[in-house]
Length: 443
Image (cartoon, rainbow, N blue to C red; front, side):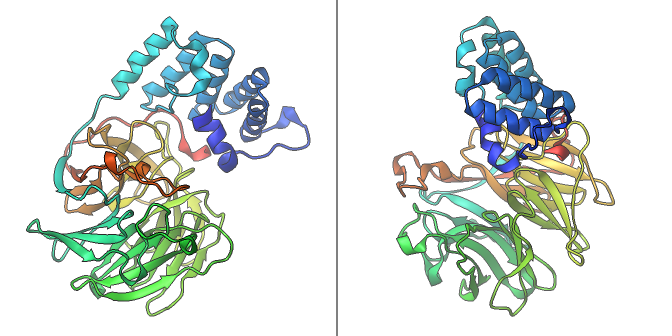
């Protein structure tokens, strides 16, 4: 159960209290199950997870955990039946390498599961290679498009710079390595009205020139779109908490909204201001990632990695979760890009990695459907974020972030390869069917 219950226990589980087991919620039962699992009491773990699943029978997390428990007790048939439910919903939570299933590997039931898994992993490819950045050491993340000139900007984590690819195909450094104190690049956003490129940046041990005093530093930079000269720079003051400024979006009035994935909050940078202001407090989300503004720019949408899609009213700061119908899974969204009827996002929570189109109702109060546009592309090695260019979604297929070690700072340069940027059309033909029957609203 490590990929789901153990990983999410610290994020999602609610601690049960009072010993009133008969009135416990599904989340409280799951929390007790995690405790039993950690104590290697697998019979008790399974009993709790079954009760949680009885209360929330379409919760994929509980389905997987019950499958883990059945496997730990040697019940191959039931474990594989439950895994099959997830595969039918195009969801793989890593059972093939999860040690909880070690005891049932080699059984006929497991062989059948592996055949189903192979079917799920068949690539769904609708994109073309937009371009390739030949430098294998970039570790590319954020991407943004200048609609006026057609230039595409890509942020580098490893080399602490931003690369520009012009419409004519010319590739050059938009800013140089560590220019103006730039750290590892995270996300990018273009402010066309003011001719600026905004970038979030933070320190990681495997970036070039990392020093111990860089630990915990993160901030927002703005560069002139044409010259690359620094226009604004604000670093988040250290307060002893973990911060990582990540996705950003620019309002028409020049206000920049920034997600803090480390503290799960939202900041804003007012026009002319020298400091970031807290807009949504820490803990309001569980893992704030992507941001997008509504067409009228009155609502800020937030992709929470752990709980799905949220909307924040910019005038009242009121937050609401966008409910989803059966057939959706909205955890694991890396970033979101607005399109006329909703959003497009890279989703890396479940496997295989994929790009999804999220359609919302006209009132923008709930998700109507989620479609897989692309999945298991052969060039994937950590697909990440993206940006809309006309009727295409541009995104990095291989960020290769797994080549860097966040603890030691080592970098597996021998495995690095050029960065592939894919162009995925999202108009016209519909993609694959929706992601399954479970609701993301309760997770």
